[in-house]
Length: 191
Image (cartoon, rainbow, N blue to C red; front, side, top):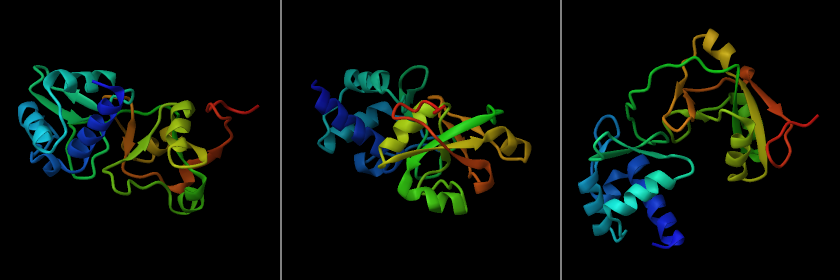
């Protein structure tokens, strides 16, 4: 399977498991799990060739670790990023002192006025380090990295979760916990 085909199929998988299960004619349960056999049949019926081996390769090679199988590989789900309500069975976790959020400069004024909101997703996504946040922000335009005072938020009663792929999740981040940081093109702090 070519790299290009793998990327195309992975994008379709993301659409199905995170946003539109009906695009492959499947349903997911309350915890986001989809039956692997039904998913493969649905993807193939939708014109997206995929077999069990290719699906396993997508899950294993996805650099963002977007997907997980259950223990016997009969079910699959997205680790986070859903635009429909899903109970990922996440347990609240005490966050580190700071977490990071990468975005584009064109969104900065709005964020600094109203904070970070989940928008079309279930949670606000935060990165464990500025390098990852920089990569995320770069996908949306000229990047800016925001430092989130996560421990102060937790002390104020905000709840944090960590998805299986290391992405931190919370319901919202008010502007008083956000600071714009200075980082170079690789997400390293400026002296």
